[in-house]
Amino acid sequence: MQEKTFKQLLMSSNYYTLNKQIVKEIGIESAFLLTILIEASDGLADEEGWFYQTIEKIGELTGIGRHKQDKIIKELIELKILEQKNKGVPCKRYFKVNYEMIENLVFQNQQTSLSENDKLDCPKKTNYFVENSQTCLSQNDKNKEYIINNLNKKLNHKEHNKSCDDLKAIKKWFKENKIDFSKKHENRIIELLKNNSLEYLLKLFQEQLDILKDKPGVKNIAGIFSNHLFKGTCEVNLKEIENREIEQEKLKNEEKKESEKNDEIINIFKGLSLELQEQIENEIIEELKNPILFQIKKNSENIYYSMILGSIRDKLIKLNLV
Image 1 (cartoon, helix red, strand yellow):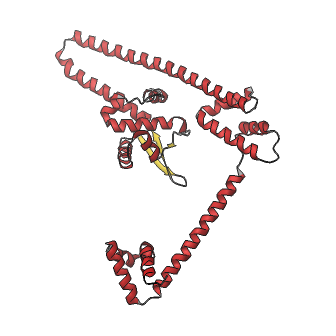
Image 2 (cartoon, rainbow, N blue to C red):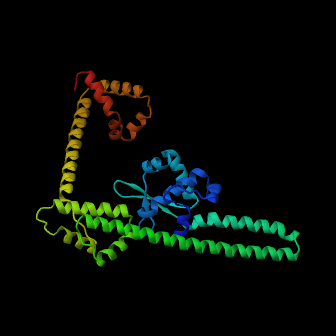
Image 3 (tube, rainbow, N blue to C red):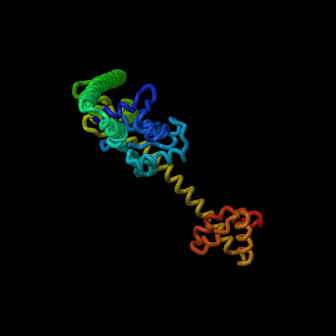
């Protein structure tokens, strides 16, 4: 069965469709989460099939919490139905659905069940019934092939209609923004729609247009936009980059000030008598009810003091030393 055909069997734009055989094999919650991931891959997956989906988004769509998500995803990975890898900064979890394994799970188990039943029943029957049984199975295979071919035709028709609708929506956007839509534009858009959703392209186009509108000295906005579209290039939002750099610089300065304050606290604390230092540390560990801190101090004083720094600050404030 084609990957696209099987994906469509598990998906619907208006409601969630759960395959009965998958529910039977892996449970209703796992089947539900798998269907959500399959829907997410549609339009988000790259050429190799990888896409990312956040814990929060899955929770919003399914109502399944973080702990349960992790458990189900682990089970799907063990079944080799799903692959996961983490990448990017900040780190994001990427998934890839193995449609071949799902197909095996759904159809091979059914065929195995039929085969087992044949083994049990056939010895009890005459050659006449065995021949008729084989004829019936052969007919079922032809029916299955007929159904799949029919489904392929319907899905291809549906996909063609969707592509036409998407193309119309983009043409409408071009018209609203006074950009001529040539045959060259159409060919490029059709190519982009193969790997990108309509929503993503419209959002990207609008962002690019807004940048050009805000850019001083740009006269032929439509021409520059089209040129970027044909070449696969894009405008850079210098204002956004500048704001981001300012924000990063601000964070660095705040981190530096915080680090200086922490160093000051540690220096004041280290300036106390050893007896008073020990008394303060014992009080903190007793209040935190975490005797393992003594062991952490033996292994790394830096980690140890970073863990109790807040408590040290509170103690020094009470002693009017800060």
